[in-house]
Image (cartoon, rainbow over all chains, first blue to last red):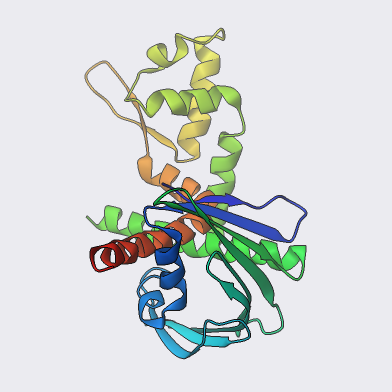
Length: 152
Length: 111
């Protein structure tokens, strides 16, 4: 089951849809248990270090993604944490003040789960920059793969 | 990174034409000569040759020699860089979710 991204031009929104072969309770746990979240969240090849993680309504989080090239710190507040819905703010400390509001909803498909994450950026420009940073990062990875092919 | 940008520009320009996209689609199923490529099109072989030249200059295809034949081949790494550029936000998210799949698997084993 692959990830679907919807990012309509001229809007500050990104919507991500994905299905998981597990019930909503397990997907919820993987998002709210710090020992589980460090095992999957974040960019490929980066370690995740948790500074603060309190996944309850009104709680806060603060974590660092790190690789040999540097570290990237993120923080935010959990507005709503319930069994089928998490609403939280998200801020990259490399671009402080650009706070995104993320709503994650879990739908039970009978043993499977559909997860929809809707992100609202502070501006269309901030949304486009987030998409482009993913693109340039992926492009670097593509060229690294190309380097390996050429060296091989 | 200016060179990479120029390569991307050339590749996207080359793909901004329905005949050239059809040629790429055909070559994704295997090599073919200009004659074989020209067959399904209602345009001259010369016109197809010009399209092939554009794709070659954009680094998307190469031509080899096999006796009298000069078949065209796709350059997979060039296309990978293109689709990578378009699709990386989704891929980065998907990679993270595949790790989440693995975490969920372990949860089901030990409920």
